[in-house]
Length: 485
Image: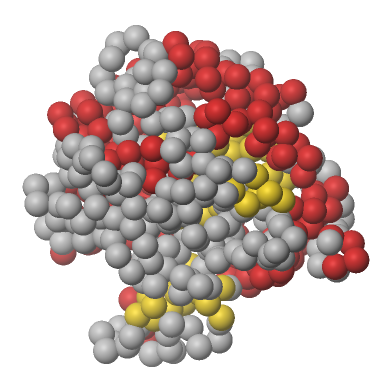
């Protein structure tokens, strides 16, 4: 058997994409709450105030806030060993700037944690998952300001103390490296530069994003140290968006460009969070892009003292990199790239590359040699509900099956992999487009892009398939109608 006996099988979500109840029980608005609906072809808008008669997908989402017991029971029925979810910062500190936490918010997550523990499901909590308090955006322009470090630490003090003894695994920032790209400015850091209204095409000031990353690195390192002081059982991880890159050709120019792009996108943030220091290759990047990071006394010491305990990442696809600007690009998770002629693509144009996951796991483990989890992986697709109520998502089963097989190969290669949480284990709102039509879940939610739907839950074919995967610890991956119908 390749996977560890105590391998953590489960699923992953984010508060802003599935909780709803955006202004209930004292919750304040987050950056995601200010985003309207969008589509694969039309960008979401960012509004500075809530507009009447405008649809904001996060406001109701799939209403996990009022249905968490039902949903966690379904996760337990599948056999989840772990459930990755995030805490909405604005449930605990509505503007992000309060001194005392909101008790109703703390109590809600305590109830969610207790419900997980009732079924022996390990909570894996993301502290900040694309939901910076909009109050922090308005006052500080998000993480561009150093003051936000202390606000984040105040938040960490509240949750680390409240959930001591109940939670073991924490992630400091979701896909922290998304801020190496323009879209991540608002998405990850809450930076809203003057003139920005379009989520996809933000007014970008690179030096603010990279200064914001420095502040997040310091906050992450301080959170690691604080967590270990509060509870010696706490394990704190980083989380990266991994955009696996291949040279489009064997032209040395393509090889060098691939290395350069991958260093900045895929390795820079991990190098800082795992190794505790800035990699030297970033010096040239900063110089050539006129970026100067303001680093205060003791910052480098703080980074060294706050290295993460484990490494996690999202993996959906790979891309090709070409030095030829004439090569056509393809769409993808935050980052486009040149289309790989050897791969199929999803309905949203994301290239499907299971073997790339094995390659990626090996590359990361060779670099860092610390325990790893794949905390996002999945297929966004159009799901059809048949007249009998069934949803035959064989395409999703095939996608996940092939990726699990490659994880098994990576474990055989020697990678220390201890968990897997496919993204959107229940249908939720897309972070990039605001759509419900782009479905990932094992559980179908009756909710649509115009806001309609009764929010009822329905098991897809993949539900029972994944249940069997977990029961067999990854041994039974076949998709047979006689077994799973």
